[in-house]
Image (tube, rainbow, N blue to C red; front, side):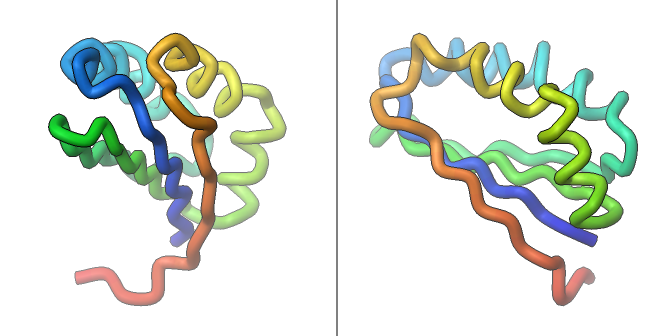
Amino acid sequence: MFARFTIVQVNAEKMDEVIKLYEDSVVPGGKAQKGFCGIYLFTDAKTGKGYSVSLWDSEDDAIANEQSGYYKEQVGKFAEYFTAPPVQEGYEVSVQA
C-alpha cells in the first residue's frame, strides 16, 4: 500500500469551507479512482494547516492518478484558500493494524 500526503496551509477563517469542499468533491471523486483505498483529512482550525492522506493499492496507482490530471484538478479547487503552495509527499505504508 502507498500513501500520498498533501500538506496545505489555508486561510484559517475558511477552514469550514475547505472541509466541505473536500467532503463534497475530493472524497467521492477519489472513490472512483483505480487503486484507491481510502482518504483522510486532518486539520487545525486555529493555524489553517491541513494534511490530506490518500491511500492507494500501489505507488504505481498513485502515480497514474497524478498523471491522469485528477490530482491537479482536485488541488486546483482549493487555490483560493491556500496561503502557501501545497506540498506533496509519498510514502510506502510499512505497518497497518
